[in-house]
Length: 304
Image (cartoon, rainbow, N blue to C red):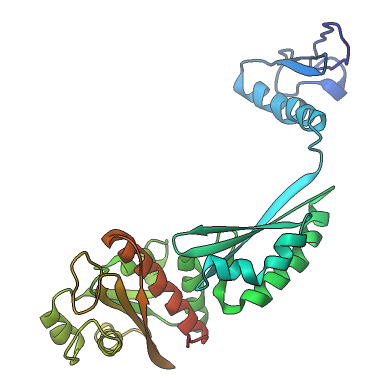
């Protein structure tokens, strides 16, 4: 493939036997390139191997150069949970207002807040050097709310934490009916850390299977007893429990009231949430919250 910049239709073909600088090592079919009045026109072979090669080494570089995209653009996603988007924006407002290269943006999804740091430079290492100090500031300011970066998920992070401490985990669920257990077992190798789960939906099963003695079952006291009962019955180091009123009808508490408790060898604690939305949204957000509270407890960063 050869290129000439001209106002005329000047086209030349490149073959294996001709100039190595413009050869097609994947075959003998010609590739054609023409720049006419500032517009590139290309014709490539239909054979996939030859076409893909010419796209990668001849066409895309020309288009990037013509569009002024020779610089490397890279983003780093810092993942957080536990702080509302408005609070994250307030804590990082100076970086948002002053940042041009790198710049930052906020994205909220499924109860998690992502901070995207984007930089451009002449080469990858240069871009990394621009991102690194901003990432350090973001992590310092958000503290334990940060749980991962880029492709990491709460499931992968929690599994890694459990393996580091050689701990196993189990679940005791009522309102979420197994959603937490499903997410914990969604990864390959989950059997290394996951012992099992108990779905005690009915009140009598909470008492019979998890030794819940609390008069009401949508309470922090009941959630704590569920977590402790699961540790005993499942023989695991860590147990996370969920009870609540997912709606639309209230059960002891207004709809959207969800309570989680986590028990580890170091202690046990519960937390109450008032979650918005319909029944399925409440249950999904509750499962996410339960996993994050478990991460904090396993890491020793107990919430207050």
